[in-house]
Length: 621
Image (tube, rainbow, N blue to C red; front, side, top):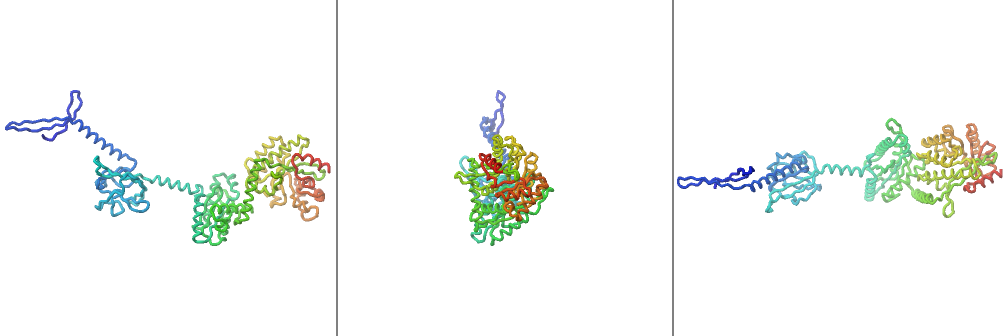
């Protein structure tokens, strides 16, 4: 029978029927017959159609796949090369079909591994005829770097699997690739975020610890020392408050640039956070090197900075700690440098201070006191005592000064000179000072109701309290809550605090509230006369150091006389502190001093004893 031919017939219902028709010619003598054979080809046609559809589907998948797909025969000749493979590997499908594909990738370890076929060269190009084996064919995904013909390196994930027919015979390979470029860029971005300070571009605290540990390891092997300089910017808060945080951020960027200019290539500067920076000096041979670098940093940072038309002046306080002299661990080096930095700040700012173990002892004591103060606040251990202020001519009590006292649970009283400086350094002075203000106003108001009316109340305020943004609100609320006349409240501020612009602004606001303002310890500061003329002051308090010798006719007597005369001519009252003898009181009275306070009249007493103390003073006359 001759070869069949597939045709379509038509059934009675009009549907098409795939058939296969075969024609055979039969001869018998002179007779010729044609034998027609018709077979139903529906199943064969359907199978062929399914195969065509599967092939079209596979092609569509390959063409539309977001990831590169490459298919080859058993000899490595390219059968399919997806459009995404063209984009990632920078090769053309038209140039590769039917060709062996000597794609060579490089592992990150550096060894060359073939994707499909091993070639003598490491570059894509025509095969050299040497058939290679697949590096792996189980579909395992591995990471490589594909090197394009133009030298571009593309990180990829690669999986190669064998293609087998139903009988299990291997007839080709399929490779699936994933372009890792975006992921690698993201990982690098996250690494930078994790290791770099976003504001200044400097290494952050994490990298600082790693690099400092590495510097210590190098010194252990090679000798020398590691210098750690912890730098804190003085009065940085003032820039933020006056010019805004945006300008403060710009300032930190300029500071970072100046710090980088002060160190060697193998040293590092990192940002700890806020306005704190750390410089690591690796492998220095002499301790003096760290001090020379610190001096250079002070000089550089004290130069005025220009911020969008504003000239800003700052200064650094720097603490220096050396390995292995001062500490042997990363944490201790930074902690001790921080301790030295606070010592530099206390010494006057704009300077550096090498660490000493005496500093560590003092820091430990400060921590102990701070911890005890926090417990005392929670237990209500603090109390307020009141020292009367007396009219030196009439012996009448005109007011009282509220003084913070800390009687411990064991009955021993802790000296304010011991714990007030710690409260200032740690910021506890703000909540404690607010408590003193509210307590004193409440207790003196109650004293009014108990028959001792009209006393003036003097309370010390620290500069740190006045820098608090809500301090004026606290004073105003306290006066309102206790129905306390603002003119009866006198807030005492140390003379040196007046040079702070934030404090000066707060003083003007207090004056607007009607509150009286006094300069405490007058004459011990360095800008006395300028402060008296600049601000609306109500009282000057002569420091006890000048009162001690006022009766002996010594030089201090001239100082007190000058202060009293200046106050009289400017219409400002004067009160003397620390009067202990009648001779002192008489000398001050003769010089024209209006008021005084001290042990001659009364020590500071609790509110429950104040009425009796006032009666005793006024009765004695």
